[in-house]
Length: 209
Image (cartoon, rainbow, N blue to C red; front, side, top):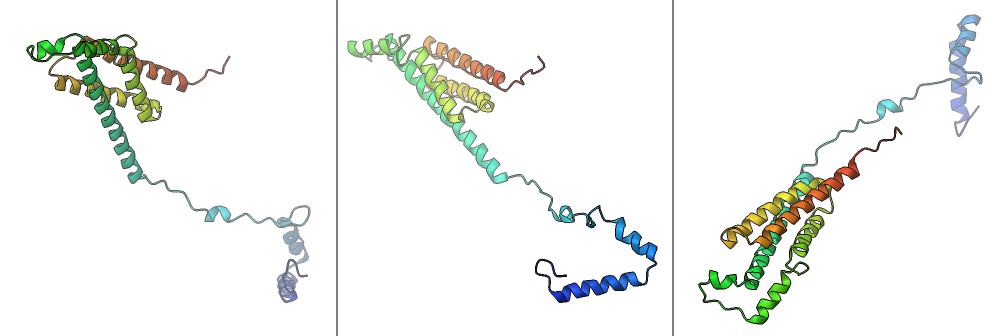
């Protein structure tokens, strides 16, 4: 009565045990025992004990990863603050050269040659490199690159931009020129648009219609 490699000795032991257990029982009890836990094919059903041995998962906060992410976010904010300060400062300097502000600021001791002045005027024009459109666009592109386009970081980048702008004012010695103020407004409008687009992307879709 060997099955799947069970030896004849094991089979005989099983038959002997079965015979011993049933010999002392009344016929009715033997018949009852034979059918109580069996299906139509005579197979005994035994509940699986595997579920009791499955370990329960415990979720532990990954402090190291969290701290790294915080450090990365702070580094990105710092980078944006620095680039904003540099851009606003350079834009203001170019604006000053284009409009002869340096003569006034330097009490007439600083002269700008005509070619430099003309180049500066071109650079701060509507489509110029230091114009409102291109300067604000570079700042927004830089912010997006730092966050990887993560919409949850938009407000962090907005705050970093504001801090960078204030630092540029401090370096400049007061309020920045009008072109920089216009750039500030353009960047803030860009952040508003990014937040609006993100809200529309993540909003739940109405499937009732």
